[in-house]
Image (cartoon, rainbow, N blue to C red; front, side, top):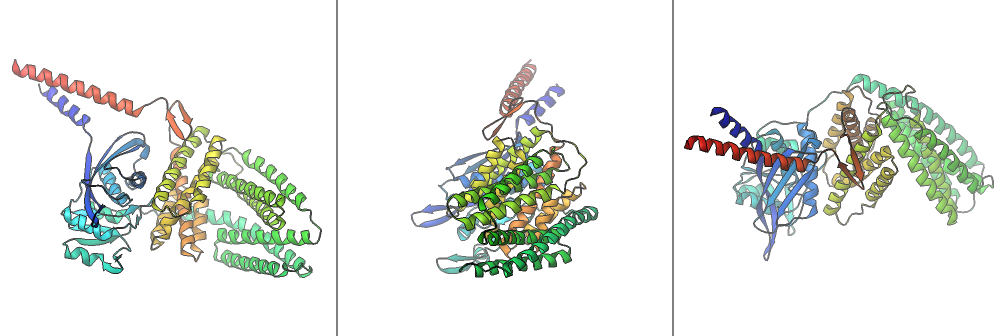
Length: 588
């Protein structure tokens, strides 16, 4: 008898899924204006393959669905869970129609984390704020109305994004903290999801900190110093050569001032490069020298063209021939775990070089010879930079990566970049995201051509550009910088040199513009994450058969929804069988 009771209990437990019920504030539009209303979010997590399902009533806009996917990604990063091992089911219910928005992103992240970790939540806490991919909490609207929603839900603590304490309401500045106090609600600013989790769970959760690896840092410095030595020498010699040409040339009217200004800019870049080299910031020095070389190459070829010493068409043909040879050499290299990052950088740069050459030819045939010279110069130098990166490769062959694994990783990156871009486009409809959309198009083209490495590179470009508005409305770069540095440190724990991540991080440190600085920190964190994904990729066992259809990965071996349905049916039958058997035993 006891064994049947135990079996029944186990089956009941198996047939149920844990769920988190959490309340969030929203704004509803009425005939008298906007009012705050509480909504209910039911979150379940079960075994699956990384899908996020959302059911909303009334219907909400796409930004909430995109926010749910970002929330799941962040939650898995916080908990250390593999997002490909679970499915998330989110149900949103409201008694009245609500205005669409991403403000529940932070709340959904908290709910998914608590579901994954089986933590209980403080029902007296409510939160508003969108979730960013790095875990920071982004600004939202309707702060005062949402404080009222917290009051209606009997919540005593209300979390808002940092920097939104003071609200412009009908031309008046309202202190949200004081406003909440009058309603009996304590309003607290939070800048990231870790701070929010502390109030919801009572647990002092922090981003896990990793130390730098001195050996890896030293190896990075050594690699970049060798490259900087070469590029700075080349650029300084080129400057003296072009300076001599310029001083001995009588330019047509209108050209003299342009030439002198560009020469001055090139010199300023070289001075900056030399200063950064002395500080040990070798990538930053190389980057400045590269930009100087573009200016100098253009001035050199412009001067020769104006003096009748250069045939523009021949110059472009020479570049085209060289780029073809360089591309062949780059693509002839086997992809290994040791050279993955270097080959990715080389392929992306040779791709950009060919794009600039296309622009040069278009300008040439349109009769815009100045632009043709400039784009041609850029194409040549970008092609050279691809070969500079290739020169960093270790000649010894490492373990060759299974192309299907790179294909699998490229599919994940493509899916995420599309989700993120769609998400921010719904948040900022007036902003032009054509740059990110073009990168996604290039990524898809590369994918169709089997160039999965380039797909990943272009997806990273798209994701960073898509996040630009989120960076622009942020109040500080401290968290973004800390996040990137910690990602780099984590990669270094595997004794891997994250060249791209460290390079972008170093470059960001040497920038003055806040937005550009934050953007390069983003690049740094994305490339560090790519290295971590590569580490995981080595351990991934792919399904025996899988196919790519368009933009979707179709797994032939397994169908999780079907498996779940079958398991549920079997459990139901067994419960009925055991229950009936027990009933007959008792009756007997």
